[in-house]
Length: 333
Ligand code: NAD
Ligand code: WQD
Image (cartoon, rainbow, N blue to C red; front, side, top):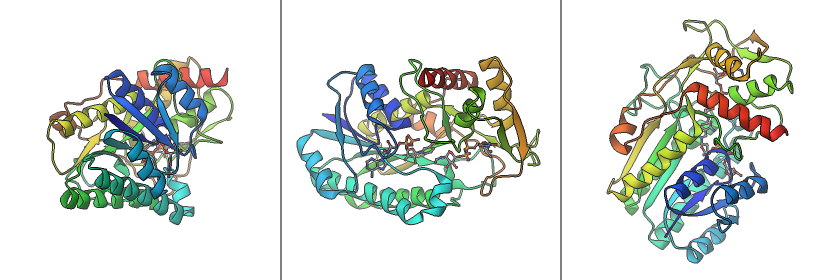
């Protein structure tokens, strides 16, 4: 029996494929390579097994997904496939709603048709918006602020309804800010063009592809005036998926939302300081206006992840930045 990993050639999916393989699970990887490459699939085969099953298909294609379930012995699904850029989603809301909702519905329907009932979903702390209380728990009200965030919240609602009606058991992992790369430097995040996210952009400044890092906002109500996030190592995050599948196999029922974060917030300036130590050279930056739509601060209460999944993060901000930097240097060479 295999775990179907959708979006498994992407950033978080690829690390999870390795973690699942390392835990002894058989994996079927599906991706349409719209935001990933065959190179990532080749690297995955090197890190796992040359026999790793990879199927290139679009998860919005109902027939193709049904055929996939009929050809493979799938007992659970980890669903990463989605479009994920917040600012792009504001410009292309229909593409985001179509892809993110439709792929989820199509996969769920195939699960119903083939009697598969364990599902792990890639949700996001973006569903909270700016919470009133920090650290944020899963009980906090939701308040997504972009089409991307709404699409994640809507998928959670669809999954909760499917859990009720179709006996599908779901863990919805609400990721905070994943960064870093596998210690082998063979897989990692490889964004096209100038990245939007802090750490990939900072790394491109460090290797002089970009002159200067814009720091969005120096006047937040935080100790150093810059915004605070809960950065977490992508390998820690990958391991949370293995544990979520274990919890479902162990009898966790219904729909459960679980924060996946370290519980520690770092400001933009703290991340820059830590990166300079890891890289060994200064990272030029300039404080500019706040970025529209950004919140001042958020970090997770990761208590439920420990209680329900037995998960907690083990890797530090330095580990994240070192592994991200090593991956970036390898990509360049
Ligand atoms: P990614 O873009 O690297 O990976 C997503 C993969 O899904 C890509 O390889 C893409 O080609 C594939 N894909 C997209 N639509 C598809 C479709 N219709 N059919 C088949 N494949 C399709 O993104 P990621 O950073 O690895 O994110 C994975 C998941 O985690 C996403 O659902 C994202 O919304 C969620 N998430 C990401 C972050 C983050 O900061 N990276 C934070 C919270 C949640
Ligand atoms: C982090 C901090 C920026 C770039 C996004 C999505 C969220 C989730 C994770 C998917 C913020 C600041 C950034 C730069 C900067 N993804 N920054 N200069 O915005 O917390 O979360 O990714 O679900 O939904 O919104 O992450 O890395 O973009 O920003 O100063 O060049 O770094 O303002 O305070 P964010 P990020």
